[in-house]
Amino acid sequence: MDFTSFLIYCTIATFTPGPTYIVILSTVHNFGVKKAMKYSFGATIGFSSLLVISALLNTILITIIPKIIIVMQIIGSGYMFYLVYQIYKMDASNGALNQTATFVSGFLMQFLNPKVVLFTLTVIPTFIMPSYNSSSAVTLSILAITLIGFMAFMTWALFGSIFKAFLQKYNKTFNVLMVLSLAYAAIMIWM
Image (cartoon, rainbow, N blue to C red; front, side, top):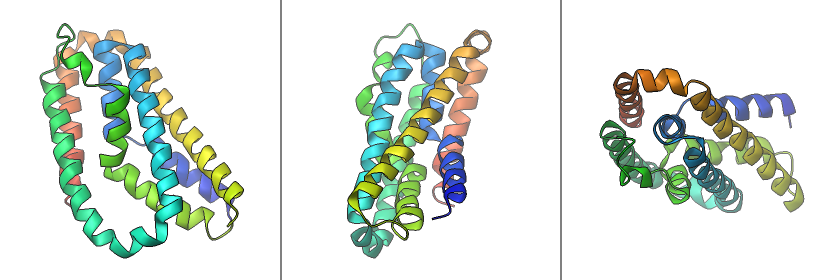
């Protein structure tokens, strides 16, 4: 296995903006780092779960992938538009909206996020399985990829906390930018 290519692929795929990071950034902005951490922990467990599922069921999923892609597009974009609505209506003083960035929602977002699903479906068969077939090597690879993903989540939460004062000053503009970014990501699923 080309370890450098593997690390570059994992880093680019996990650190680049996507729906999960938009939610993390918005959560830090509106509810603080502690709330974003709960979401991030859920996202990490969801991400790791997808990697495990990919490793265990890769050959089965490849044969039925055309059907899964359409279902994931519908569910994923629908959920992302739900998040668009939640962010647009977000008011830090509203306790009900504070319930949207939970451990469970972070976990579920990974299964509905096409970027994460496609990454987990490609990283295992492309980099790991051709070079390693022992369960311990696959397990270590999953742990390493999960750690990279967790570092990406924490980086976005840290970014949000560093720029929180600036973002609060431009609250409405920030929320509109987050809404537009997430809506764009949802639309791009169909392109």
